[in-house]
Amino acid sequence: MVKYNHCEMCKRVYATETWIGEVHLYEGFCPSCITEKEESDIPQESVEDNTTNNVTVQSEENEDKIESNQSSPIEIEKAFLSNLAQKADEVISGQGSINVLIKEIKDGLVDKAKERIEESIQSFDVSRIEAQKIIDYAEETFDYILEYKDYIDGVVKKLQDKPKMKVKTAIEKIFKDTMANLPKDIAKDVLLNKKATLKTVYEKAVDWYSIYSDTEDVTELTKKMTLHPFTEIQKKLGTLPFYS
Image 1: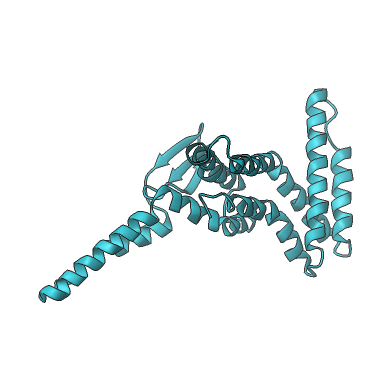
Image 2: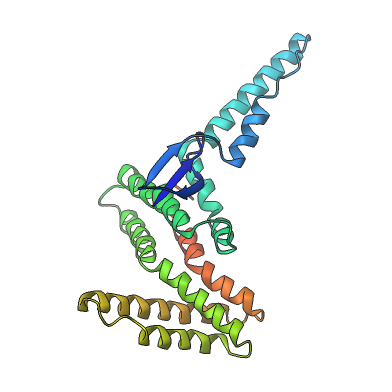
């Protein structure tokens, strides 16, 4: 299990470590908030001129209002949403945990969006139906996103072992090999679920390969394929009325 360290200011997860059970601590600050805190702690020079002083005070009050708005829950969600593809890229580059990122997306965006739908969209409003479809898409993606990343990692490994192999051939080869190697000594319903998930992942890999197949660099191509579900979640959540 995992211990999640959340920033005291923005509540985002800034560090994790292996732990007994799942623990969430709200201590310390993430790098962004540390910078903001250090800047806000810098003492201002006193100004004797009354007019200048009034302007300075007014300016500081405006900045406080801006900072307050920027740290509001909706602004925190929007900032996280706008940086989602970058955060996913960092995880894929080995700088974080995909499990933590998925939990952040679920807790910080999808679950929050559900609450905002309840609060801001009437039950008879057609916008509510469209918003719910977006939430359903994100949650369905969570059902296979880990397996999809593992699948593309397998494709990358296959291409590294056989550099002359075509990407689409590698996608098909991984599907056949994985299907053949599924454990047989498990419950029938479990085996059927594994096969269904693998088939879904394979079909997604083929579809998303076709989107980026014009990318000549194989590394860049497979990277775009791995990022695709995250960028799609980002794009779809970004259309929700309270985030636009």
